[in-house]
Amino acid sequence: MTPFRTATEVADGIRRGELSARELTEQLFARIDASTVNAVIATCRESALEAASEADRAVARGDEAGPLHGVPMTVKDAFAVQGLPTTWGEPAFAACVADEDAAVVRRLRDAGAIVVGKTNVHHLLADFGRTENPLHGRTLNPRDPARTPGGSSGGAAAALADGLTYLEYGSDLAGSIRIPAAYCGIYGLKPTPGTVPLRGFQPPGPPASPAREFPLAVGPLARSAADLRLALRVTGGPARPSRRSRLSDFRVGVVLDDPACPVTGEVGAVLSDAVDALARAGVRVRQGRPADVDLAAQAEAFGFQVELFFASQEGRDLAGAAEQERRRAAFTAAWARYFADVDVFLCPTVFTAAPAHDDRNRYDDQVFWIAQASLPGLPAVSVPVRQAGLQVVGPAHEDDTAITFAELAADVVGGFVPPREGSSRVLDR
Image (cartoon, rainbow, N blue to C red; front, side, top):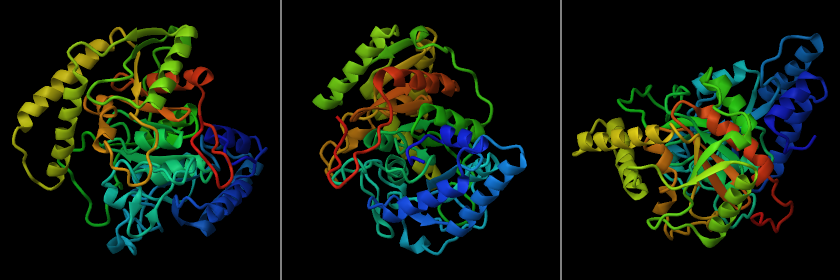
C-alpha cells in the first residue's frame, strides 16, 4: 500500500474492499513517527483508528460510502478540529483545544474522510516563504531538508510530499497554498474566494466577524489535480463544469517572465519546455498578458489589498482604499474580457525553486506571480513541473476549468513525483 497513492485511488480501493482504511491509517502513523521533516504536529490516533475500523466495517456491511470514505488525511493547524489544539504556532495557544470542527473539517468528515492530525504553520500564518514557529519549530522540505517548504501551509505541502497524508486542506491569502505546493512538488488550489466557507478558520478566541474576507481563500493540496476537484466538491459544493474536456481544445494564454520579477534560469527553462510540450500536444497557445493589465502594477495593487485585509480585521481604515478598490475593479474587468477568448492563463507560481532556509534574497518577490490571480479573485492551481511550479489561472467561479487543464496537462508536463528516499534527497531535476 504505497503512501504516495492519490486520495481518489485510495477512496476507490477502500470502497471496493481492496484496501483497508485501518491498515492505511496505521501505516500513516508509522510514517509520521519516522518522518524527520516536522510536518505533522498533532495527531488523534485513538479516534482516527476507530473511525478507520468503522469505515472498513461499513464497507463489509455494504453501507453507502461517501466520496472520501475511509481516506486518512491531515489539515492545516489553523483549522479547528474537535479534540485537537488550534495553535497557529503560538505558545500562548498551546492548550487551546477546539470543541467543534471548522466548516471545512465537518464537510470532509461528512464525505467520509478520517482526520488523523494537523500540520505545521508559520507563526500566526505570517509568512509565505517558510514554516517555523516557537511552539513546533521548523518544517523541512522533503525534497531537500536544506530548503524551505514555503509557508504558511508548509507543513501541509511537506506532509503530502513525504507520504504522511493522502489529502490536505490549507489557506491562501498571499500564496500560502500555491507557494508551498510549488516548493514541495505537489498540487495546490486557491479557489475563487467565497467558494469554501471560512467558519472555524481563526486563532483561538471569540468568533471572528471580519468586515472583509477578500482575498483570503481556503482550499485543498494534493498529489493530483483529480484530488483537488474531489476535495473542492465536498467542501465547496456544486461547481460550473469545465469549459473543455480535451487538452487540445484548450485556448491558453502564457507569460513566463516579467522584468519586474525575472524568473531564475532553472525555473524559466523548465516552464518554457513545458509550454512547448503543451503546444506540441495541440494546445492553442497565445503569448502575452491581458490587455490593460500591467503585471507589476497588479502585484503592487495586491499588496495594498493584503494591507487592507489586515486593517479590516483590526477595525482600521486605510487612506486610499476607495481608489485601490477602483483599481481592483478595473483589473478584474480586464481579466473577464481576456477570458472571453482564453480558457486558462499560465505563468510561474513563483520565480524560483525552493530557496535555502532563511534565504531572504528577493524574498518579497515570492508573491509577484501569485498576485496575478489573487487580485482579481481568480481560481489558480499550482502544478508541479520538476523543480518548478506552473500556475494555471482560470476564469472567476470556473475553478474546474483550471483543475481540468491541470489534470490533462499532467500527461504532458508530468505531475507529482515522490522525493528520493534517503538522507541525500535533492530537488527532482
